[in-house]
Image (cartoon, rainbow, N blue to C red; front, side, top):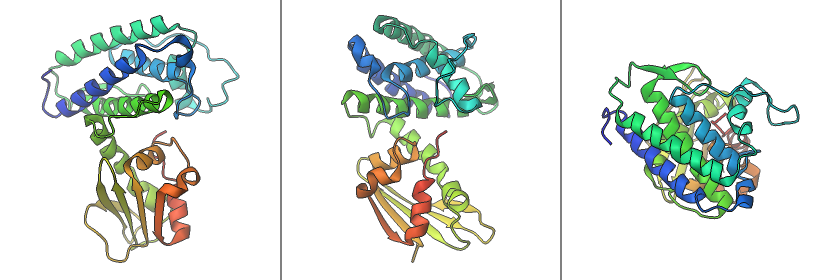
Length: 275
């Protein structure tokens, strides 16, 4: 598959994860589709329905005309309502219906991407909430979203893997992009302070968030002398925290905190950067 060079890494990552998902769900028995996943309030069927629905929207298909039940307590705002429609409309689909639609949707999307000739930086397409965004940004979000949901499905089905796949690298960069806001704005780290994140395991990296005199956060890979807080954790724990799959207190034994304990708690409480 050959597309614009700036789009290729995201297409490759998306392809790797979507194929992994197809392999995971194809052999599932009917009851296994009802297993709960780490994605709050969604089952295996719901996660796959979400993937199918968003890919259909990227293909330009019209959104389903569907009224949500009133007893879905996790549907609390416009974003969750928007996302839930594609999920709820498939909630009673059988396993064969789900795998058939997934396979057909993936074939259509791969054909679309293979034939994509537009400039990713200037071409505007529909984003996750129907808003307009660049083709490049939309594809980056799809690579991220599909990899995160691949991990949701792996956790639900007890089949770990692909923590170092192309999608993992895309996810790392996108999750890290939200870290300065978490530290400087949500947690209120003081001006002139620095917070270090040290992640080890399958993907290893260290990042420092520095808060300037006006309270703005920036991030770099240079170490900091005397940071206000250092947070050390493994890659899987970082993903689960930053993607909102788990709360900090549930993985306290996997996070090492050094420095200002109160600030560290504020950062970890606000750590999730996904909606």
